[in-house]
Amino acid sequence: MRVSGPVWALGAMSGTSLDGVDAGMVLTDGHTITEFGPDAYRAYTQAERAVIRAGFGHWPGDPGVEAAAEVVEAAHAEVLARFTGAEVVGFHGQTLAHDPRGRGTHQAGNGALLADVLGCPVVWDFRSNDVQMGGQGAPLASFFHHACARYAGLTEPVAFLNLGGVGNLTWVDPGLSRPDEPGALLAFDTGPANAPINDLMLARRGVAQDEGGALAASGTVDEAVVAAFLNHPYFFKMPPKSLDRNDFPALLSAVAYVSDADAAATLTACAAAAVARGAEHFPAPVARLFVCGGGRHNGAMMAQLSQRLGLVAEPVEAIGLNGDMLEAQAFAYLAVRVLRGLPTSAPATTGVPAAVGGGKVSRP
Image (cartoon, rainbow, N blue to C red; front, side, top):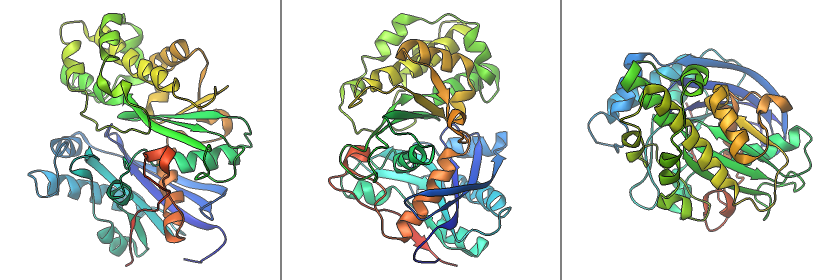
C-alpha cells in the first residue's frame, strides 16, 4: 500500500446481532474520508447463526469456537471476494467473548487465512492491543465517527449511536481536527440493544428479529422492569466502559411472564432508556443524534429514543451516510490508520491510558 495519500480500503463487520456480514469500501488517507465506495451484505443462514451462537461466551480452544470461526471465515471470504480495487482489508471478525478486565477479548476468524484467499493485506485483531494496554477494547468506531462528522461538514457537537447487539454512543466535537485530541470524543457502550430482542423473538416465535419493531409497537412497556434494569451496576460506572453481549442475563427472565408484544416493547424501552442514561455523561449537550446499525430500522426503538432523550433520533442517512455499512466502513478506515502507524483508540474512547494503535497485519 502507498505510504501517503488516500487509498481504497475495504472493511467488514459481523456484529453480535448475527444478521450477517457487512462490507464496504472507503477512500481515505486514515485522516480524512475522501469518498465512499461500493458495499455488499451477506446474510447468515439460520444454521450458520446457530453455529456462531453456540460459540458465544467461549474462548480460543473451547468447544464450538473452531466451528464458529470456520463459518465466519467462509462468509467473509465469500462477500469480500466480490470487491475489486482494495489495497487493504480491515477484518473485525466475530466477537464471541469480551471481558477486558478478565480474560481479554475474543474475535473469531483468522485474518491471515483471508489474506491468502483474497491476495491482499488484511488488518485484523483490532481490539487486543488496546485491552493489553489497559483499555476496554471497545467501542472502536469512534475515530471513524469523528471523520464522518467532518466529512458531513458538521461543526457543533453531535452524537452517533450504533444499535447492534449492544448499543454504543460516540459524542463528537468535529470542531477539533484530530480524534485523539483531548475533548474531541467520548465513547462507550450504552447497554444491550438488539441482542435481547432478537433472542426473545427467536425463543418465542422462531424468527431472527422484531421486523421494523412492529411487535414492540403493539405492546405496552412495563416501566417497573425498565426501572429495575437501570439499577444494574453498569449504569453507575463512568465511561469509557464496554460490555459483552451476554452481560445482562436476567433481562429476558424479567419479561418471561408477559405477552410477546409487551416483552418486545419492554426490551426495546430498556435499550432506549440505557441510551438516555448514557447521554447524561456527554461533556456538552448535542443538538442531533444520528443512529446507525440495524436498530434504526426499528420504528418502536426510534420512537422510544426520541421520547426518552428529548430530541429526535435521526438515521445517519440524514447526513448522507449509510447506516447499514458504517461499522464495516469504520474498519476499512481503521485498517489504513493501522498501516500508517496512527492511533485507533484514545483515553476518552476505550479508557486506554494514552492513544494507541492496534491490529495485526497479515500479507498474502
